[in-house]
Image (cartoon, rainbow, N blue to C red):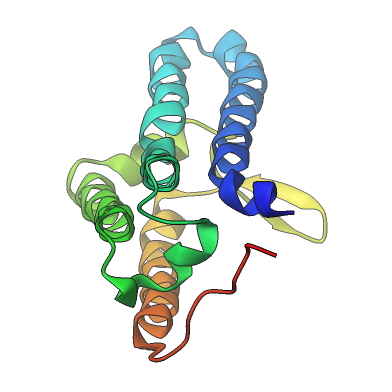
Length: 165
């Protein structure tokens, strides 16, 4: 089981790649209806592959170089490990860039124009999100993330489990 904890970051990268290729597949129907959307879907695809994997790549490098033992170390940021701090910094930077893009660079409108990237679901009915929904829900998502990260940063005296057994 130790190998799963040590290489869990790799599963996260594979999951992001699968999601990117699923989006690429789903986008083909929208591109067929409106070929002008192709470059936008390509940007989303590449963004998921490269930007979406930055935290997991940092985590993997930290573990492989021996700065951390496993994914559990990233739940305990008060260890002040360089790799853990870089992981959290990468997420913070991506949130800042995401906020800037959504609110000041028409990112929400871009998402609305490219259906299938983000969808809402209720009782099995999938609907494309609107720019307004993106702008309303982004602060809630960020707040939930900040609360979760705050909880992890406040855990004092708790150490990650010993995975050497």
